[in-house]
Structure formats: structure tokens, C-alpha cells
Length: 596
Image 1 (cartoon, helix red, strand yellow):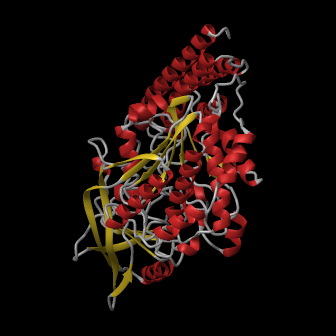
Image 2 (cartoon, helix red, strand yellow):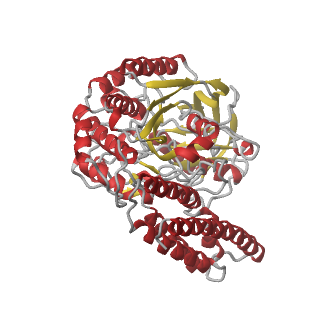
Image 3 (tube, rainbow, N blue to C red):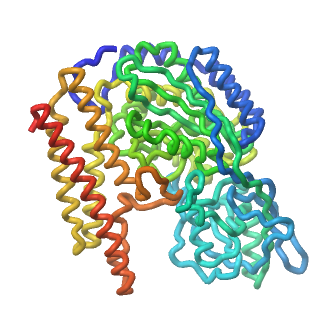
């Protein structure tokens, strides 16, 4: 494909090529995979996971797609069994689930008095993985804390730091949902190993939780938490396919999703695996249309390793991703029953026009956006790689309200998520066909636009609004300097975007500039740990280096105010240094391309 001269257009499309690719989409291969995977309990490290990986390889071979199977050694925690014993005039056994990386107690369990430590239930998709309101906890020292919601790492961390010897999470409905409670993202290193939970954690249904709370209201009650988990390092298959680009073959778009599951996991994530396989088939058949390469990865270790597969890949291919990956697209839980809306679809600010346009052109619907949170296989924030589509379609919020259902973290908001009930009935062919179109258009546009369609003016505008809010919270801490630096960068970048490259070398230079400043801006917006380190799996404020500004105005303790001020100075220094480096790059590009 020739590199055409092009004015920067974040809503770029190629209707003729896209129509040709869309016509080739079929449900035959995707549905065949879903039916096959609906018979496999794809627990990471298991024979069924290897069977699923072998199936992918067989089909990729049939399509003529080049692939490799990597064998990372991942640190996993696989729940085996759990129950709760409620002690009173008689001992009552309550069936439970224990999240991955809970402490395994052995048959004796951990016994203690219980206390209600309310953190509240999630109210939307974007708060499912939050810690909830843990700002006003009762004295939980030496006690087992009973709280609402899923056994998320932030919630568990807050309670164990407060001194709880165990955590009992009351799920929002009749189903008990599997999950993972460690805040360590991927394999532990020397900086994060100490964050692994050292207390037992269990989840029970809401009816059982209400019975437990009624007993607590009647007087003191003790419970025993009994958990059994298999923890250790296991080799797992990681399938990576690639459809090579014709012009800019060194650059690639990364499409990815997890192959492992809780139980047979049809909606989470057999439907995603099927979507990626069908996109591989179609792109291979039309590979001469592809400007950049498209790399497709099926991650193990998502469910029981806290995104262990994608994190391993981010670690071991970090330099390649940093130098060549233009964007990554997570594919989790598309094509689920009744998921007719695109509400709170996650994308970074720079991908707004790209993501909205793909959904609109694929479905005729308008989407609403949500800021990506720290979940899914979004394992590349530290490298500064932009992303869009962690999840896709979902049951409309008004319909969920009518049903009286509650938000979950996948399956198109079907509450079978992370339960044995996530079976073939959760998948829907009509929705899958629609979501296939969405993902195909998004990936193809990122791969084929001459100028990579990520608009970092929007990122800078988002950063400016965030920092201006922090500056108002902490007016005496020099954050106005950060606002001024963002304004200067915005002005310089605007001049770059208004002049179109006219040669292949000019287009290449523009994309290189975009990628370089994007690496810094994305990292500032979402990460604090450092370029080659992973932040914890905890929800943090935007521009985390400056988040201390929110707390400093309310802090009354003089020592703690100075601690926060020191943190703010150090964070401000990093932000100003990175923004200054971006500005110099933009100015140098403008000078060399006659755009000063």
C-alpha cells in the first residue's frame, strides 16, 4: 500500500477497503470456537487450556496465519474450595468461593468474631473494581470483616491494613462470583511481593450474607473461614499470531484477550477468543490491504494470575512494544446476550474519534466513553501505549435497572460473569456479529491510517483539566507551572496538526513524533511506577504523580501535610520534565519540517 499524503484526521476511514473486509466476516469460525470452548474449563496451567490453545493453532494453520506459541512460567493461585462456618447454638456451614491469592488456611481455617465494615456495592461498570468507600471503617483489628461487593484487591488491602484477620465479601446477588484479591499486577517482584494478601478471603451470596448479618444484629457471632488454593509457578501456552503489514511492517497494532476462564467462561472470554480468531482469518485473506502489521495474542493467567500472561509479554517484549506498537486493543466479553448498548466503553482520550467512529460506522449507534480503569489486560500503561475497547457492548443500563440486576466486570453485564452459569446461553450470534464489526473497524483503522489516528491534543486537554483541578485544590504548590507547560505543548502541537505531511518520510516522521510524545503523556496520565515497572491493581486518581493535591487541602496533621507536599514536589518535577521533553520534540520536529 502506498503511503498517501494525508492531513491528520483522527476519524480517518477507507470505506472501500473496509467494506470489502466487512463483507468477508462470518460467524462460522467464531461460533465453532465458542461451541468448542464451551466444553473446556480453561483454568490456567490446565490440560483444557492447552487444548484450547491447540485448537487456535489448528485454525491459524488452516488460515495460513503465522504464529508462535510461547511458554511463559506464570505465578498463579488457583482456588479449589472454600466454606464458612457460622458458630452459634449450632454450627451452620455456608458455601463460599475464595478469590485467587487469598491465604490458603488448611482444614482448620481461621476463626474470629465478625464485624460489619461497610464499603458499599458497585453502582456502575466503572466502579466494579473499586475498593468502595473504605474511609470510615470500624475497628476490625483481630476480627473477620464482613463487607459488601466483590473481593477486589483495594477492598481487601484496606481491610487487612486496618488489622482484619479475614475478609468475608457479600456478593450483590444470589450468585457467588469468582475473582482475584491480590493488588500485585502480574508476577511479583522485590517491590511488590509484600503486597500479596496474608489473610483468608471468601465470597458468599447475598441471601447468605443477610442471614449472617441478621445473626450479627442479634449479638456477637464468630465464623471460621476455610480456604484451599493451589499456588505456584506454572508453564502456560501463549499464542501470538501476526498478519504482516505491507508498507509500515515494523509498526503493529496489538489485539489481545485472555484465553483462560473461570469454569467454561463463554461470555468471558470464549466470545473474545472467537472474535480475535475471525479477525485473524479476515486480515490474512486481505493482508495486501494492511499498511501496518496486526499482532494478535491470547493471554493465559488472566483470571488466576492477575493478568500474568499480558504482563509477562509486557516485560519480555517491552522494548519492541515501546518502539513499534502504535496502539493496543483488548478484546474481552463481546457478543453476549442482550448486550445492545455501547455505554461506558473504555478508551483513552487520544483514541476518542477512532473508537467512536468505529462503533458508529459498525453499528449505527453512538457510544459513551469511560476512562480506562486499572483492570482487564491493560498491562501496557507503564510503557505509554494508547488503548481503546477493554470491553465493548453491554446490556443497557435502563434495562439492567428494570431487571434489578447489578454491575459486573464482563459478559456484557450478564450476571453469570465469573460463575458456573457462564455457559453457551450467554453468547448471542447477532450481538457477536455486531461486535466483530466494531473490533475489525477499530483495528483496521489503527493499522491503515497513513497518520496514526490518535489525537494527543485531546490527551493534553484532558491532562490540563485534571491538573487545573489539582491546582485549585493545592494553590500554593506550583501546579500552575504544570498548567502553563501543558498550554505551551498544546499550542506547539496544534501547529503540527494543521499542516499535512506530503511525503512518505514526512508521514513517518509525524508518526514517530506522535508515538514518542504519546509514550510520555499516557504514562503521566495512568502510571506512576516507572516505565518498566507495573503499578498495583488498584484504582488510582488520574495523573497519579499529582494526586496528593486532593488530600493536602483536607489534611490537618502538620507532619502529614509536609509529607504530602514533598510527594507533590517530586511528582511535579517528573511531570514538568516529561512535558518539557515533549515540547522540545515538537519544536524540533516543527523546525525540521518548516512548521515553526
